[in-house]
Length: 153
Image 1 (cartoon, rainbow, N blue to C red):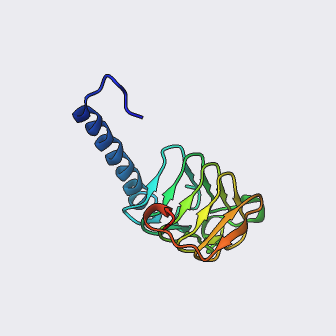
Image 2: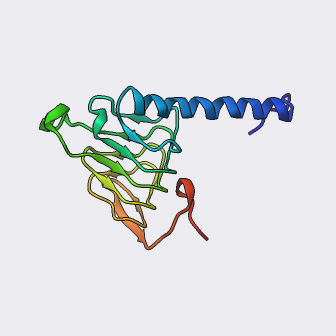
């Protein structure tokens, strides 16, 4: 939604600043934390990515992670953390991770996947599917998505 008192040039300037901050945040995840995140991934500012075991997070290109999503890469209670836990939490390319969804540690989400809002992904998700629920189950398979998890009509 665009504010009425802003002209188009000022609005586009604010959009550019937001996009630059998003890029800077993913750059920081890649550079300082060592996460394997593609440069064109869009991660909401309110999304949380586990920084306890950052080298075990992989996110493919043109993936969108919505607000309040949580991507975990460690589980302290089962001693899957730090250098002892080599399983990676992987999210494929052209995926959409819905708001308030949770990706558990060691889970692999395939390419072209849509994770429904509020889903808890506890098992690997096959490519070209939609998952939803708690625990997440495949709702539909055989879909195709374009950039950032948008469904091809």
